[in-house]
Image 1 (cartoon, rainbow, N blue to C red):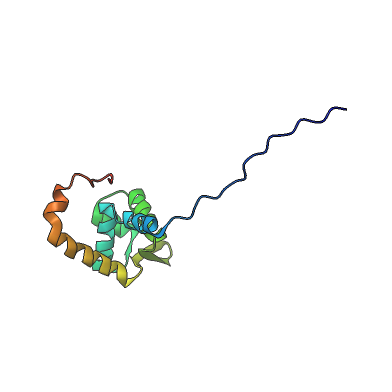
Image 2 (cartoon, rainbow, N blue to C red):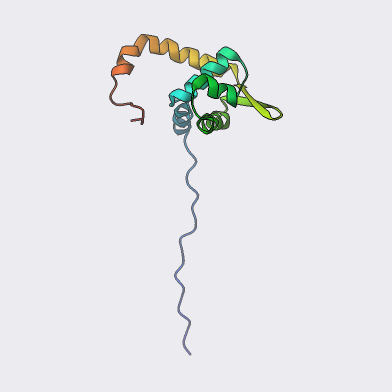
Length: 126
């Protein structure tokens, strides 16, 4: 009597390793790596709550582009929303976001010349 051929076994599915904290911190800061997102945060800090339409007017960019940036900022916890039908208003989610921007500006003041001349970090990252 012939035995059926053995089916090759597949390696078990392995979940990817959880990201380490330094990886997550770097990813979090990449949320600030776009000038439009930084400008949005600056405007919200200066003006308080703003709608998408108001941000479009302030920044002179398309509504889809601003909405995409706001989605990123919201997902990472930089901004919060409030719905006042039909508009959605955005505001800084946490005072520490404002502190982070202030610290960034202070550090930049001491290093602006080097940052401007840096060729390792450009608009596309390292």
